[in-house]
Length: 231
Image (cartoon, rainbow, N blue to C red):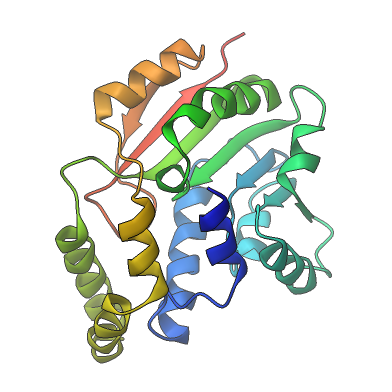
């Protein structure tokens, strides 16, 4: 996990151009807005990344807390959203110190693949504690074991065709093959989950869940789950 944090804390180049990054975050914000339970809801985006479209998401809720483990990502998010009174940027340690029941929705999107499997039960317990009664946890972009690079490439090219950056995507795939991301992915690997396994882990964490479709974002070969704190 520390190596992945160091990667995201640096000048990572996982987007093929500015349009790719912009439409990616716009799509994420639009998809996540559908899960906000009320206009005054308190929402945590855990592992938010650059959160370019967090302002749009904040329009749909009362308070939006952005959390990322990479210090440079947090500082950039603070600067980007400094004028928005609805948005707060915190470290994971600061989030862990918040009171029980602080949020109506906790979002963890495209994060679990970078977290070692033994760490997940503790994180689930922490996210459950932060949920108000009746609140929900959204785990999205979870990668099944049978989904690999070919499916990711196909999803990216389809998204690029739809959003008008296909030539850049084709060039970007060549760069990615030689990039630090590809090297780190080969060295550390990613964490994969079967659907049944994820549902069982959530049940064990006292967070009854179901798979929801579509997945958040453009890659529909990956999975999303919504779990609830019932008591």
